[in-house]
Length: 113
Picture 1 (cartoon, one colour):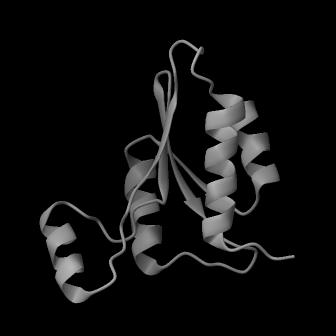
Picture 2 (picture 1 turned 135 degrees about the vertical axis):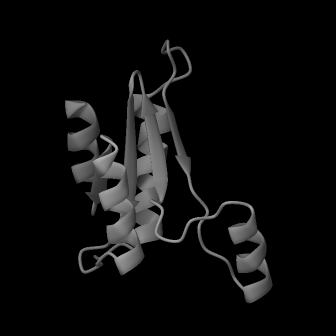
Picture 3 (picture 1 turned 180 degrees about the vertical axis):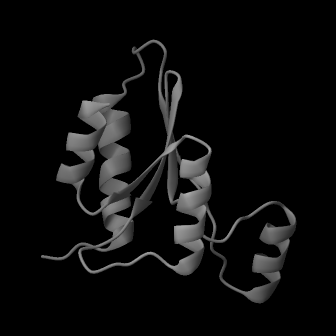
C-alpha cells in the first residue's frame, strides 16, 4: 500500500511526539510543520507577504544544537525545482536536509541522530 506524503508526515510527527520526544524529556525537542502552500491566489499572496517560502521543507526538527529540515515524499515523489534550491541553500548554511519516504526510514534516521 502506497501512503500519501501527508500520511507519511503525520505518522512521523506522531512517532516523534508520542514516542521519541516525550514531555518529560529535558530539553524537549521540537518538530513542527511549515505551511507553505495555499488554496487560492489571495491566500498565497498573503502568505508570501508574511514570509512564506515556496520550496521550504515540510517540517523542521530542532534537537539540542542541531536543526534538520525534513521533506516527505511518497515512493514515487520527486522534489520540485524550488525544493531542490531550498535544500541547496539549507545545506550550504551547514544544516541537514532529509527526504523521508516512510515511517521506518524516519525512525532509523532520527534514532541515529
